Length: 71
Image 1 (tube, helix red, strand yellow):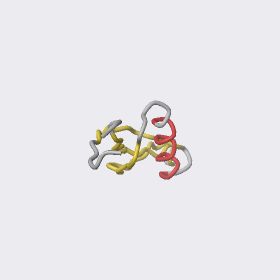
Image 2 (cartoon, one colour):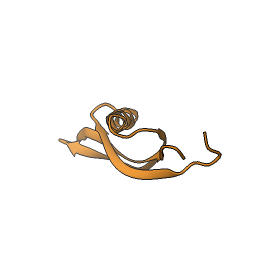
Image 3 (cartoon, rainbow, N blue to C red):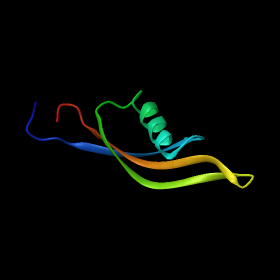
Image 4 (cartoon, one colour):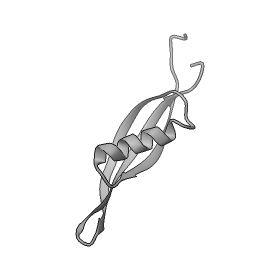
């Protein structure tokens, strides 16, 4: 283990019909399939999609931080 770390950030949008929290979980779950070493997230935006005057989907823009391997 080194005494320093280097990270990269990517921005993604998760969505859910259920809740903002679920939208975050959906995004993390999907990104974890292809990104290794995800260590943190930052909620950048929250918004929703309206259908017939009601919430159709919650949408959350996340910045995901992952550690570069061997750093």
